[in-house]
Image (cartoon, rainbow, N blue to C red; front, side, top):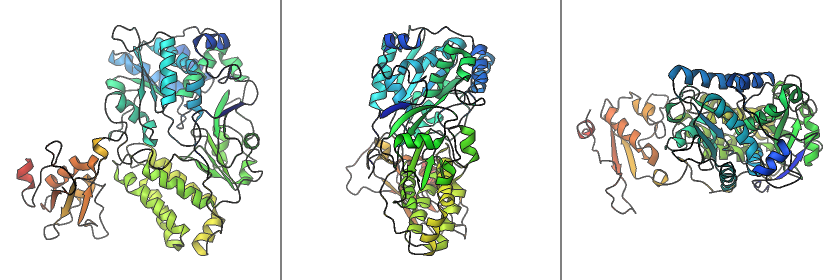
Length: 536
């Protein structure tokens, strides 16, 4: 079985280093060493930074790939229009088990990231800088870097800078989750989608981008667009940080110029000469087969053209001696557990998709395959964040990439290969399911909700309000008569009882094995009295 990657794996470089300059000299570049390696950095105006970003075609390196110059201009325009100071946020929340590039940067070159963030803050007149992290090592490194620069969160500071530590969860890395946590809420996406450029931290226009993105901006600001463009491809200049793991002899983070053949990167890490498949972009990415690997080069456009994805920069080959569907099932089960538990299509759909993939492996036949395809289709564009979309893309890519194995499992007795667990995952039980962060909202269910079939008329409001519990069958009625209410959904359960037009729902408190508590309990509602007990 593949062990979990360390926070800072081996680091390699192809060609001349940029982001990894000085890594051969010290384990971590403190401020004096950072200045010796990279030199001083002159401030720039906001439009200068935007033009520089546009000339080097800088796009977000966290997965979405949004043009940085557009984000920069959008935040500046919103701040000027509203007459408020913007906020700068560095997203270093790298929570995929297969990604370590940003963690390496924060641990070994934190000042390069701060350079880019502080350039933007000064150019736009921001007075608040927040760096989001999820690991103890990244928190320590970044807090030390702020101290080395004399930056703090004191009220009298010209720039208030701090580190925001969140739980290690897949959804924590979403921009909306990070902003919500900075504002004091849980590190999960809010139900309402609002552009951070218009309204982010504290309602202010917020420039939020990935850690590597700010580091790339710092490099380009020092050497200029012409010299920056001498490395890599004409339309995607510069270098890229990749995390290579899976079936490799040497898991590593590697800095490569764009345009380097993907095959060469895999050889450096000791991947199988003919991999069965390569997962590109991480666990929200796409599979490509061995023949396609020979055509691919390291660039966002090239990988898209061959059916892959640069995504979060994770590259994971698997060998010929493991079952690719079984490997994908492990990932699909992990993705299902990483749901924030607040959107029905994600909270219910992703486990259903994982069960469907398991049914295929267990000989479920064509019906199981169609069920997986349908579930993956149904969860898209229906969540508060991109987690269901990315997970669905992974599932669809799995079904498309391994057609021979799929046929063997669907139509025959399976592929006959074991599941070796070569795709890295976190240890089981390292974080609670449901709402990240543990605590009161993640405890065992205290409430049960019941449907009185003598009153239910199939209005369907319960499924709209409480999709974590209720789904409607083909007849339009709920598919369950009673169910436990997740702790995080208790308020919605009360709302469902209140709004049921037929008064067909009731909630009862399950006190078995619990000490009586007067704090945070829902009222016990009997059928027919819900509206009067709670008010209209």
